[in-house]
Image (tube, rainbow, N blue to C red; front, side, top):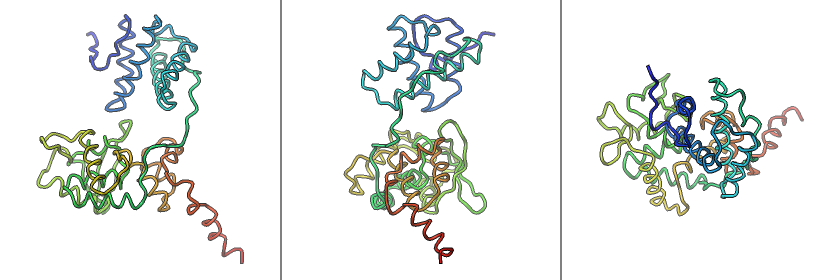
Length: 304
């Protein structure tokens, strides 16, 4: 029986063999949601570049892929974007090697831009975060529940909007919610009392379906969630641009300011690399948090 390739999983490029089309579809099939969309976009960009340079997909050499990266630089793409695209290309060729379609990956030793571990995104301080939560609490239950999940649990917008009512539960006295994190990882997170109350009000008498509904009765999508965040931010008197991801930044900074260990914050934010967590920490240079104070207090008794 011939394999069926979903049309959405294919990356249009110059004429390729069935095996190569299967490789593209097979690689993308390992991902879902926004991750899959991002990887498909990356492969489309690379495939288009290959077509423009009359280069067959599996005939690429390391030098060709590095030329692709230089072209991205020349078009003004950021280092993080270039690195992600190269990672996607490398992942695809690694998959092709595993499937015996190539002897070796031409992207195995491609040099990637050195990332700047300094986030230049908008940040919220403690007072702004508090004002945002107050403004959300004075609005609709859906607004309060969404802002609370994003700000107090550090969820990505896809995790919040993808939450279902039947994923709510109780575990060892904690109100909980099972969510799907980036990469498809299923985790159980605890809900702060105010978040649990807000969610209860948001779902009302409903016993199934999405936690968050749009005005038309369908599941709230990330664009609708972004509009809610912007609306609540304006109501809170915050003039700077605020997006759902801004609340992840605020969560990380607030957690570290409150003394939560970096490893625990990294786990809560679902970051594979602790440097990514620190990149989102807006106050990591604060002298108030310098280790000298903790060490001095710790050894004070022994120094007498």
